[in-house]
Structure formats: C-alpha cells, structure tokens
Image 1: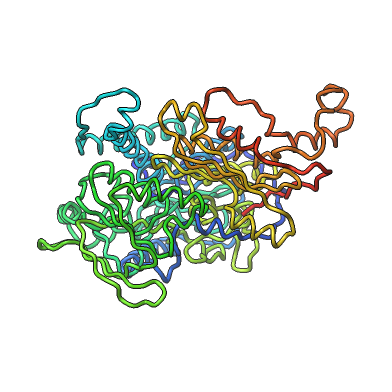
Image 2: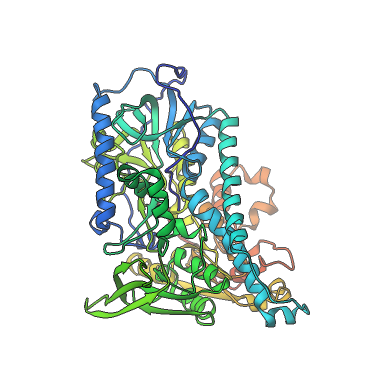
Length: 633
C-alpha cells in the first residue's frame, strides 16, 4: 500500500522558468477502452469497506475543508481550462512521489521523457515513510525476538542464550533510520536522472495543466504536460464512531494547524497516543500491556506479530465471521493455528467496534462492540490502547478532477484497464492516468509501480495491459504468508461459470531439507490449477520466507507458463531453435507453454517446496485449449 502525500525538498520553479519540452506528442496514440473485469479478490485485498459514507465525521469535515481550500485556489487561477495548451513544460508530470510515482518517473526518464514529480512533503509516500519499509524493520526485530525467546527452538539447534530483551527507542530508531535511508535513496535516484521535484500539493486545473502549491488560498504555480499521472496514494481508513488521537496524518495536521498554535498542536499530539492508526504505531512510542487491534488483515496481523514479540497482549476485533478473511481459507486456518492460538492473542469475530474512546483522566480506552449481524450491543472492552487496522482510504480530495469532467467513485479515481482516467460518461480522459491506491484496483506498493511503468509504456508508443492476477501479495509475519492469483473458492466459482475443472495440490515445509535445517518446518504451499491445460490459477504459501518464494509462481502466471503442457514441447529442442523457428506459431506456443514442472531447483533450498508442488500436479494428456487471457482487473 502506498500513499504519496508529502515532500520536504524546496523548489521554486514556476511555469515561466521551466524550459519547454522538445518531445513531439503522438496524438494518434490512443487506445480504445476495454471492458473492466471486476473480481472479488481485489476487493478482499483492500481489507476494508471503503466509501465516502463510511468516513468518520471528523475525517469528513477535514476532507471538506481541504477540498474547499484547494478548489478556491484552483478557481482563482483558472483561465480557459477547457482547452489544452499548445506547448508543454514537461512530457510527463506525476502527482505524488510514492513508490508508484517514483517507479513511473524512473521509467519515463529511461524512455527519454522530460519528467517532473510533485510531492507535498517527503518523497516515498506511505510505503517508505509510514508503511512497508518501517513495518519491515519492526518485523525484523520481532522475528529475532521470537527466535531468541523460543527455548525449544534454541535447544534444538544446540544453542544457549540468556534472557532476550530490547530497547524500545533503539527499535523505533531502527525503523525510522531505515525509512530515512530509503527515502534519501529514492530522492537521489530521481535527482541523478534529471527528474524535477516540485514541492506542493498538486491538482488538475484543466486538460494537461496542473497547479501545485500550499493547501491555502494562494494561486500556487502552474505547469503543463503532454501526459499527467495521478499517484496520490492513500491514508488509514477510520470507521465512523472511532475517535483516533493519532495526529500525524496530514489531514489531521492541517486541521490542527488552522485552529491551534504550533506548540499547542505538538503538545496535544504527544498526549493523544492511545487510539492510533498504523501511521503512528510504526513510531513505536510505547508498547502497551494490552492492545486491541481492529481488523485482522495484513496490517493487523503484522502488528500483532510485533506487539506480542515485544510483550503485549492482543485482542483482535473482526467484523466478519472468521479471522484473516482476505486469505485462502485453508491457509488462514493454518496461519491461525500458528500465528494466533499459541500467542497471547484472543479475538472476537462477527462484531463491530461502533465507538472507541481514547484513554483520559486515568481511564482506559473504551471499545463498544455490537453484533455484526443483529446490531445488538455485546460488550464494552477496556484496554490500554487500540490500533485501527481497517484498511486504507484513497487520498484523492482536492485533486480538481471535476475540472476535466471526472467524478470520484467512493473516493477512488475511476480508470480503465490501461489506468486511463474515465470521465462522467465512462470515456477515457485524454492524457490523464491514475495509478496505485488512488484507483483502488490493488492497494499494494509494487502494484502501483507496475501500473506506472505500464502507463509510461503506453504513452511512449507500446500498448501494455497489466495482468493484475500475476501480482503477488505478502504478509510478513513469522512465518510469512504469500499469495498470487485466485483463492480456492474464487477459482471454483470461476470454473463453475466458465465450465472447466479445478485441481488442488499441496506440499509441506516439513519435507524440505533447508527448512528442517533451520528448524522451521511449519508451513505448506498450495497450488490451484486446471488439470485440462496446466494453467496456474493461484499459489498460496505459508512458511519460512514465503514472501520470497511466491515470485516463481507470480512470474509463471505473468508469462503464461503452464505446469506441464498437454502437448510435447520436446520437438523444439530436438530439431534445434534455428530449424524450429521456421514454424513461428509453434515456437510461440512453446514459449507460452514452457513446462515449469521440469524446471531445476538448487538443492537444498526452500525453492524445492515449489519444485515438489509443481511436480505433484497432474495434467491430463490431450491437446489443450488455450490458456485463459490475462485479466486486467
């Protein structure tokens, strides 16, 4: 997940001082919109029911304030916004410098485009500053602590270790220093390649025209570009009724700055720390004795791993009937047995937290629960702290999209399969794209980067549609969970509609030499596939380094590789590539249907878990039908 909200670099360039681009626009390069395919699994990966009606009252007020301020500034500076400029300051302008914007910028420079990126405070967005990067630093600590605290594990390896301890501030500094290092790396890489970094919040003034500046009534600066990419990311989603005292969110900071003196706002921010989002939890300013985590998706699971390793007791509050609802059910069941049941974690499922009140005057955090189905009150929990892990909401307010006839859908920017923004009538807006969390297709940092690269490919002359079913996801618990493609229920639902069979095969880490050498044999790998043609529908892994292992399956899906083709591909190798190349259709078919079942894996490595998984699959021996076309979700 990533949000592109901030940047600390100073830049005073305006439209009048920026050299004009020499890039020749290819106005003929327009691709017809394709019908969008909506698969439920993408909704599951959002981890929350995101809608403007679900935002808390305070969030709504803050968003309205921001939107009004920005729109006032836009209205003051608009002139002739109905027509596109005749020449451009840049070939490409990207609004937001998170992982998605950064990936798009680097690829654009590689393609020879004059590129600028607009960011409001610090480069890196949520992933680098308040998400993927610092959370992995904390999880690295929790992994070491678990290993050192496990007397059974150490004894099995013949090791003796004194009681493990930790320095909270040292752990927090590790996460902060890592984020700073990665942020500096991203900034330096863009500067070195000549990407202009423009400081401010960006918004669309009209066709191919962008304004950037402060969130106030000032006119700001105006720049133009042949193409524009919106990559503004997301912020933590806080359901209605929950009073968060995490004041580090940019929206909250802005609201406080308008009402309070700076020193008063800082004082309050330091005091209100008992009901927080993931943004603030990553600072690890405290390790509460008992913390409730609202939501048991990726975010909640990872923080439960960190807090319990550092000594906290955790209570999960999940609205659905089972924990980890976004995972394959079989994987989720095993993960619960390993990641939750043996640890200091209890949970309540099928309940909503309708009201959460921060601790004050010596009173604990109060959480009022109701039954998710009957809406009847259940009980009130009193804990030391509460972490709201109910997913992410798009950061798209104040983008000025109405100036180009675009309306948000539940806060998300509507796009087609090529990430081109759609207007009120569902038609693509020329030269305007949106990538990453802001479009809601798949709220993952690497998905945003892949989407950005795909867009740059399109605007430089090569049509490209990203297959979202090939994009992997991972949860960095100990052990890790990873997945790509469909879950088993989703695959069977698809099979029933399209009329094909589904087969499932599994292998265990307990049979893997490397895992046993590490004394980490807990885990399984699961393959979901079509026995008629060997197509891989989904792969799910729970075990040691699962996040690293998933990419072989991910690349196989992306390249159209089958487990084993029902036809014999050996002819390509027996006659030699030079002779076989005369039959181009045959060579192309063999390329698409390479047999992953016969791939060689080094021994002893964890990769042999997948080797055994693919070898255990049974493909029927008859001439296959074509592999399903990649789905652009």
